[in-house]
Length: 52
Image (cartoon, rainbow, N blue to C red; front, side, top):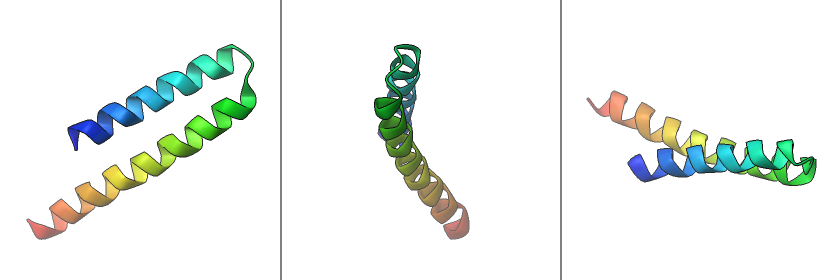
């Protein structure tokens, strides 16, 4: 879980940097990838809440 959160944060940071550099294509790709990682995090969190 901690690794996924770290990966999500890193992707968002890279996306922010790409946006600042005007690379909208890379920004879009990175934010889409970050969204997938966030979905995994949410699924794990929801699964652990239901199992408790």
